[in-house]
Image: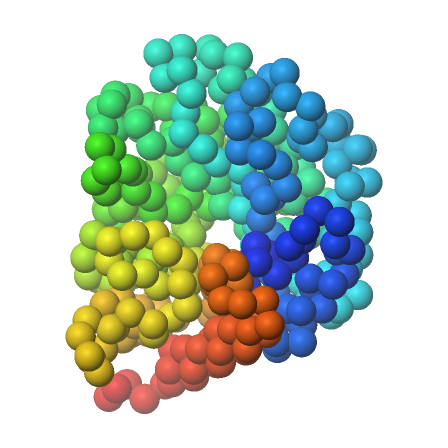
Amino acid sequence: MEIGIQAIGSIWRTPEEPADIGFRRIKEAGFDTVDFNFEMFEEFDNFFDPEAEGLYQKDIEGLKKYFLPYKEACAKEGLKFSQGHAPFGKLPNEKEGIEGAQYKHFLSIQKKVIEIAGWMGIPYLVVHPWITRKRQGLKAEWELNMLYYKELAPVAKAAGVVLCLENMFDTVAGKLWEGPCSDPDEVNAYLDALEAYGDFAFCLDVGHINLFGRDMEDFIRKVGKRIKILHLHENDGFHDLHNMPFTFPRAWGSPTVQDWEGIINGLRAIGYDGVLNFETGPVMYSVPEELNHAARLFIHAVGEYLSKRITYSDASQ
């Protein structure tokens, strides 16, 4: 199985850094693929500000010129893009909804990103569903997301990109709440409905599942082959930390809070043969820069371990 890592933390550590340096870091640690984060190239407020003079105000040709060094550097290092991540944020002016200028501005950015992703050769692009259930209710959230993805589907089809939903969470009054696709039955309901509009799939974020103590193996088995890409990382069960796997034990010397055996068994059961992609960029900002390479080497070693376990064919195990 191929092993990948997200761009955040390895590529573009500073705006002045040449594109090829980050890809070289990833290659030297042994990775095969890159998860390209489009959101890291812009201030988040600019995604919803029609007056902002940010990167994504450029037209498609301007964006191609900007991202060409990243496309070329990836190929030069013998890597490939296995997936990407579109910009995201909280829906502004929820009362205005899809009629608001901020929403329309964000939607125009998403369409550009999808087109650029296709041009870069990115096969899968994560596009977060809107999370409004605690304020608007489940029905309104569902209807909003159906309209959202229906609008993006033709652009994705033309670009040759599969849009992937992700299991999400919300933070309200300092407390974590499950969001869209946090239940496997809801994942399947979304994907069933979206089949009418285009080609959609699912990005399994194991860290998000861990926040709510759901059964990892059961979740994976229920969604099954619709899981096309992964966000592998770990947390303490309370915060979305995106840390290295096997780093949060329940007690001294005990197994980790996150159920990696359930992940392994689930992925093996559904015959997952995609990329083992690690969404662990924040790690590179937590450890001293001198230890970044060591951290990437450890993450890659975890990937090799998981690959061996997932592809092990002895039915008795």
